[in-house]
Image (cartoon, rainbow, N blue to C red; front, side, top):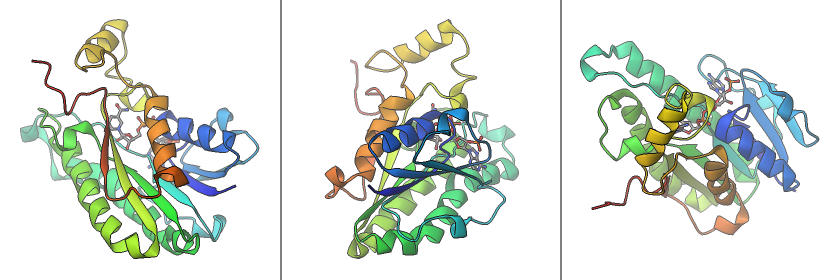
Length: 234
Ligand SMILES: NC(=O)c1ccc[n+]([C@@H]2O[C@H](COP(=O)([O-])OP(=O)(O)OC[C@H]3O[C@@H](n4cnc5c(N)ncnc54)[C@H](OP(=O)(O)O)[C@@H]3O)[C@@H](O)[C@H]2O)c1
């Protein structure tokens, strides 16, 4: 039985991951602003936390943690000329600075585990140029840079750091982009594998990266994107 912290585990990928981890007999602490009745399961404890505004609630978490994932994110799609500095700051606050806050606070607990894993989230749009993605791509690009640097710095402490870069996935975050069957179909057609992602597609990779089976993997940006980023369909 291992201890995992899932920030942003009340919906989407994080919820799917929390349920997956607890099913495998782990103990899971979910941090988010709202709870969810699906989290009322033995082995999951919910802690209310706003990553954008509050200090990390370190006192409510165990002293030894085998895995941390930080799921809060945003999808800001606007033309560059219309973006204000405050828009960039908002994306940085939720995507980057929240992740830094959680990782820094839990570093001693991750070190004590003597073999632990951090999984952060990017997006396909950080390395594949897409119009109107400048703000979110900047924030997620920062996550990628942070993660490879941390992976190098923390390898001697046996803490692994990896990033998952999803493409369009069927969660609350993407609901505006997938609000009709036509949008779902059109979104699916943009991917070589012919469909958009489901939370389970992404949480399966997150669970693998958090667990011991990936113990020789660190400093990686893993695309889970239906083939979007690396396949040219000719
Ligand atoms: N879905 C996609 O198409 C897609 C594509 C590319 C990348 N991603 C990335 O994948 C990751 C997971 O996304 P998702 O689609 O699963 O998102 P989601 O369904 O919106 O879930 C986000 C989770 O983060 C929590 N959260 C949001 N703001 C928070 C805050 N200020 N403080 C604490 N918790 C907060 C939410 O809970 P509360 O609202 O209860 O706080 C929720 O549990 C994100 O980093 C996202 O950028 C997603």
